[in-house]
Length: 60
Ligand code: FES
Image (cartoon, rainbow, N blue to C red; front, side, top):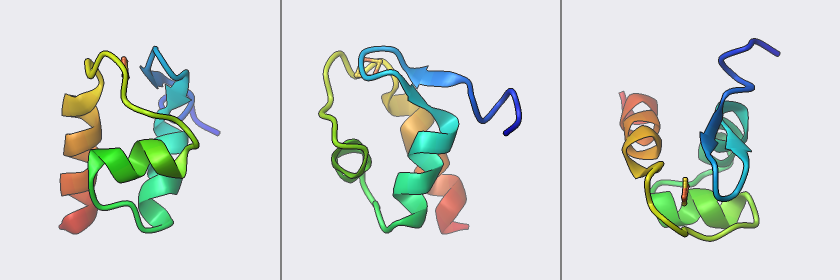
């Protein structure tokens, strides 16, 4: 796994880019579904911009 994949995107839930990418690959289409797919829930929301950007990139 690359260093970028291991980067913690969501500090509250300790979610890495790889965790989020897995949730998107499994069908998550909204941030709420990404958290759910990781067995977590949104907390502070500071990670939303990155999660939204990853969702948008996956739609391209
Ligand atoms: S950093 Fe993701 S909910 Fe706080």
